[in-house]
Structure formats: structure tokens, C-alpha cells
Length: 105
Image (tube, rainbow, N blue to C red; front, side, top):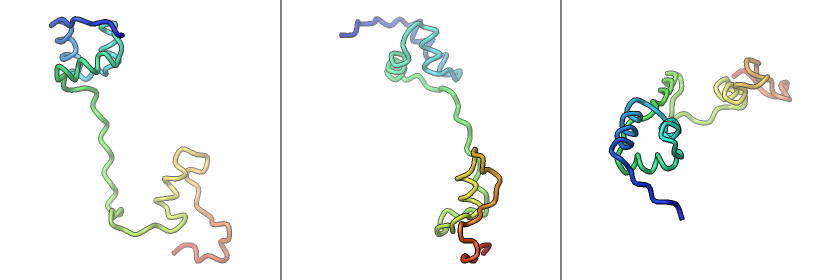
């Protein structure tokens, strides 16, 4: 069974202040010499607000309609997503049977 911890007002204030300044739970735990999970639980109980800010998502390009139908194989949007960060990034999609397909439409 875990040992009972008596929390001090000083520790609570440290959690609140560091969380408001954007610190992670792990950083606060390191500062207080406690585990990340212990700090998360205490932070929830004392309603410590804040934390690291999330990077904003880039806006969706205007040509992407969220209600559009499925894209054909090799479409630049889907091909770019599939090849991003791989050796194929930046290469054009070429179907295996390019002569049979009406590629390019």
C-alpha cells in the first residue's frame, strides 16, 4: 500500500505556479522529488490550471473540402501524406500499369 503524503501549502503553490507558467507534470515532479503521476493526481485535486501550450494546427488549405468524396489513387494530397518523411517524399506517383490507366485526370 502506498504511503500517505501530507501536502503542504508550499508544495501546492509550487504546483499551481509552475503549471500556470507552462511546466509539464514531469518537470514539476522533478522539482519536488515526486513522481509525475503523484503530481498529476495532486494537480487535479487542487485544480492546477495551465501547462505546456499545444502548437496550433496549421489551417486547412482552401482547396480541401471536408465534404469531398474519396480521392483517386495517387492524388497529390493523399500521395503527399503517405510519402511524407520517407525516401519517396517529393516524388510523383506512377501507377504500376500506367498505360492502362487514364492517369492525370
